[in-house]
Every structure is written in C-alpha cells, then in structure tokens.
Image (tube, rainbow, N blue to C red; front, side, top):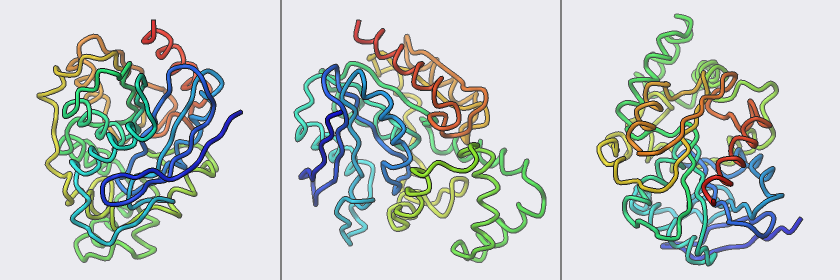
Length: 289
C-alpha cells in the first residue's frame, strides 16, 4: 500500500502529514483535542483499501512544529491551517472526517470557507456547542463514584491538575466514556504520550468536563442549517457527548444521517472497529453516488 509522509507549510509553521493508499476520493482526517495527535485515529487506515486516507498533526502537536506563541491557539487559526493543508495536498474533491474537536474544526471550516470541492462530512463524538458539551459531561461526572468526584473537584479547585491522584480519577471517566477497549489501543496511548498540554489547556482547559480555554463559548448550533453536504453524525452509546446533542445536530443538518454505536465510548473506531469501518465505507459510497 502506498504511504507518503512529509511536512506541509501552513500559517506560522509546518505540519506533518501521512497519506495511506491511493485512488478514490480522498478522506482527510482531523484529530481531536485540541492538542492531541493523529495517532489515536490511525485505525482509519483500514479505509485505505478503497481510497487515499490522509492524517496530519495540527500545529503545536505531535510531529508538527511547536511554536512558543500561545496566541496562535485559536479556532480561526486552526481553520486557516486546515485550508492550507487542503491546498498543499491539492485536494480538489475530498471527504472530511473529524473526531471530537476535529469535527468542530470541520464544521467551522465548512461555515467559513464553504469549499465546493467537499463531497461529504463525517463526525464522531463532535459537539456543535461547547456549553452543551460541558453540561453533558457534568451529568456524566455526577454518575461517577463519590470518592472519584471529590478527588476531581478538590484538585481542580486547588489547580493541582497535574497531580497523579487527579490523573487517576480522570482516568475513571476516560475508561467509561473515552475508550472502553481493554487494553487501550497503542495509537491512543501514543496520543496521550505525545499530546501538547499547552495547546490543550489554552484551547480547552484542564479536562474534558472543565472547559475554561478559548473554545469554552464556541457554538454553531444555530448555523447547522448552513451545512449542505451529505453528513454522517456518529457517536457511542457511552460517549462523552450525550445522545440528545447528537440527535439535535442530526436534526440541524438537513438530510444528515445519525449512527449510535451501542458498545462504544468516544472512540467507536476502536471500540467497534469493524462495524465503524463498514458504516463509514457505506456512507462514503452513497455520498459519492
């Protein structure tokens, strides 16, 4: 299978990319975070037997350049970066897949650039409103054992979010709602090892459920009607994003499809990998027709 890797020029630096496969309508894959890396979505290489599948580490993350200027970490900057990646790769007809923050980035990109060459949009576990995301996560947090909640609340109140005790408590939430596979896939482990705490904390905050960064007020729910391309909205039954939010996104994007993976958390491409890939392949073929 053909594999290409390299660096691409984007605003204020260079990003690393990996392209797997060839032919077909390319699928450009956007990782979450902000501040994570492409590694945890590398299972999407399963789709490369029918088309070219492209990943990149967003600026400040993974193998890409890591500028010291934290003023770069804004939604508009990452949107401009996405358009620069598309142009540098010469993608004239393509699909976009976004996981979590990657789907948020994809929606904002569509709304800002309205790319005529985009064939379809696919999102997994992606909110259209961060205030609603936080509300949903707080509901899930309330379901954790009392002793776990107390550790999380105490450490966040004191600002001790690097403490091993806090990390261990957050991991209880992650094992329920982020990835339910045991053991965790190597790609997900690599992502946590290589993620950028600076980007994550600047854009998001200390945790999935405590969002104090620059995306805390991000909300495009009222603009979903402007998304006109075929869209697949996906999530897990045990996802960090609540099902009612996914349903509202589905209702907001005319003609979109909604799939809930019954045994999955936030990463159905790991938790129910075979079913996820079959679902995506079937949607992509319909969208292209």
